Length: 394
Image: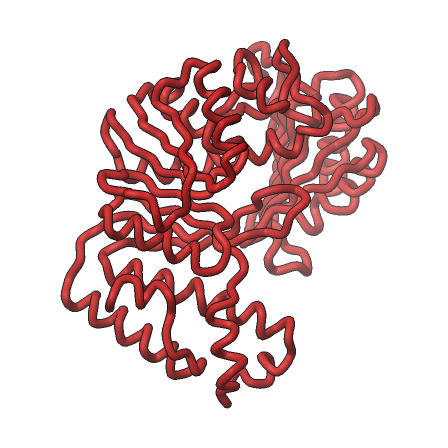
């Protein structure tokens, strides 16, 4: 039996399993085609809109791409690939393993192995994602008009509910890094209607089994009253909301300080509060970077990025990066390990940058390095001062 015959037998077995319901999965490897970055293809059966399809995951060196095809299309592609672009293939069904391989010597093998009864996988294309915050049994989600009384998420609140869980997923990994202890004190600056504040308290109290003291700071009195009523109704004794501004709040003893969408220099006020309190974790999502942009516009420095910053939209983006980059450097000056990454806060709003500072050890060498980088950035962009720089006095 030559290469073509063995490849055809492999394809025939695969096609039969796809139609008789015994197919489990199929993989293709040892790629020798024209795309140098492609490594493997993994194939599974799914049902989309009540129609059977094959989901093909193309694994590249730096990314995965998934495409869905009909069974007929997939079998035809398999005929084109096997023995040409791909020299190794493995099929799993409920009762056999079948492997095809063209060895470096040129020899081709087709091996079939019987297995014990193997369960066929679920064909649902839309997997139920395990969420850290479940919608059922959460009175506060009903009071916040996210769910009905039975815990069903309202159609117009689906994006908000996904945002809540995305936020908790991010914070859960950050909290694991700091080990704040059983009694954790959190300040959420500019808490608004409290969607995320309630969810964080719920996660800390009922998932991590900690004894949290969470305070939401909000300057709108009506929202403060509403949130305190909902917290009391939910029995969240460690959660409270206070009327006030970020710069008025006494953050002493705060383990975790959060400020999402604090406008312009209010983000600096929040970071400063966290630095003063020596918080274990500082998490901010800035917006409205006006203070630094005004200075760049005023001085119009001639430098290597002038060809970009002469355009308003590019200047705006550059000012955002410079503002947040200096914020990260100031955190590093005070001994914080920093991360800056993208935070999708809502399906209907732009993506935000999330700046995270995790308390570490401060050294004279690292301080000197951070300070020099801050000064160099200011010189390069024509910046007289950064608001956080003035607050901290460095």
